[in-house]
Image 1 (cartoon, rainbow, N blue to C red):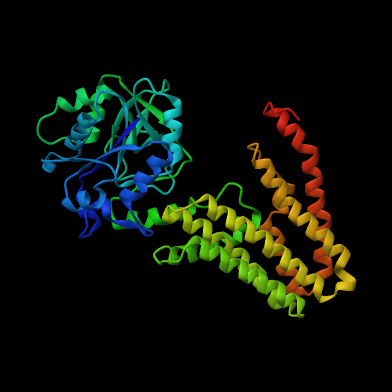
Image 2 (tube, rainbow, N blue to C red):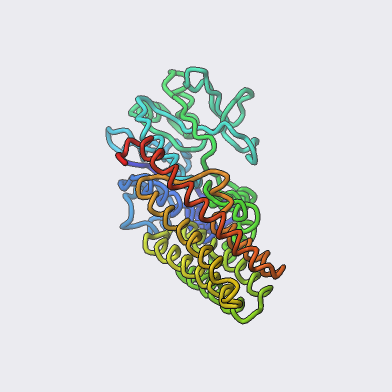
Length: 422
């Protein structure tokens, strides 16, 4: 499968001296983010239609480049050039100024459309409806109208298409100036344009400085994971995302952040051991917040790696154990038993979770969320400030091991639901 990226726009409305594809958002160019999303969706054969020689110099050797020799004919002509370069097979069409989650393209390809298909979003929240291209989708999934000025609509154009040869035929019928929307309107008139609903997935159209700022905010919000714990979602991410926003344009690497977070955890353990419970608790919570930044930076910079995830997970386990060991060391004769049980439960939650992921299973329910790492460290933070260390060890010892026991009960059922022999 090929993809065509339209990148011949000048970006004058962005007020940048750079061509639009080379404008940066949170440390990376728009075109890099688009190419990265396509590659993550499994598309390696990428055609970029450009007009500015700086775009060519930036991308040369990475993608197939097609020159738009008449940019005054607007985006429709770029579409024609890209469609001709793609050959006779269907292809994915995207815009260089639309950033998006790779899962949109993955799901589009999984659907195996038979006709030209536009990914649409039925949620209007946070969108500039004056600038957005609107879509009217019929009950049968066919698109009945498309354009910025249409009065009746029920969805928005994401700028992500699955294109068939109908697009080439429609584009070739135009002379003079014409837009991508003009081509799609022709297909609408022929009842040849269908909609594919991607509501809930991240995408953003970057046309102006205002939209660039809103896109940055939306991109940061998209880093919040569905599996985030309660504390992470409502407290930690609100701080870590601000830190990541500042760090993403610096040379700081995700692995460096993982190591720094671990050192803060180790310091927390040492402070607990030497009787500075309040400061130790604060340090444990700071470590937990910073721990969110490594993954955020990795995804923002497009440098997430298996080794980085391995390093982060391993250092997290060491930090957890050192913090609990520090608490035990503060009064070993009083805390050794309950602290040892808290350590066993805490480690086993992480271990059983990673083992379950081998089979594609993620434990998700209220009990699980109550004992995720973010919650455990938050409870240690509160206990340190309140000097209630025995109470938090007892709470962790009971609840963590109950979570693990519940997993022993649930895991066979989850395996059976997936058709895996126990």
